[in-house]
Structure formats: structure tokens, C-alpha cells
Image (cartoon, rainbow, N blue to C red):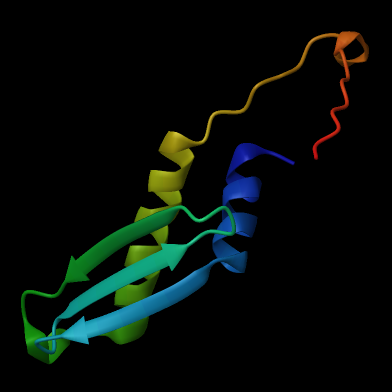
Length: 90
């Protein structure tokens, strides 16, 4: 799975909240499964041209681009050499 597909999957599984204010502002917040919260917004300069579904798509793309910028994948070389430990707790 490539990085973009991973981020889209995380976005799809995230808890989402959408607020519409002043008839032209959309604020979208998402909470990923790991607890990370991302917030983006978009605003329509003319409230008569406001399109909720278009605004939600803009926020979605902004959040996906944000997540793409912060996720960094690492390739583990020789995973068979990773030492495994076990601990017992009281």
C-alpha cells in the first residue's frame, strides 16, 4: 500500500466533525484512530455561491495533504535481525 492510500484509509476511518458558520465557512476536524486531531477550513467569499459538498471536499483534500506531509514511512532493513524481548510485570 502506498503512502497516499494509507492516509486515505486513515481519513476514512477517522471520526469527523463539520461545522458551518456564517453561511460561508466550513470547519472540519478529524480524529484519527491513534488520537491525532487535524483541523482545516475553507470559506466562500460570496455566501450566495456557498456549496457545502464542494467545501467539504476542499477540507478533505487539505486534511489529506496535511497528513501526507507528516507521515513518514520507514523501511526496516533485515527485520529478521530485530531482537525480541519479553517482560513480566507485577
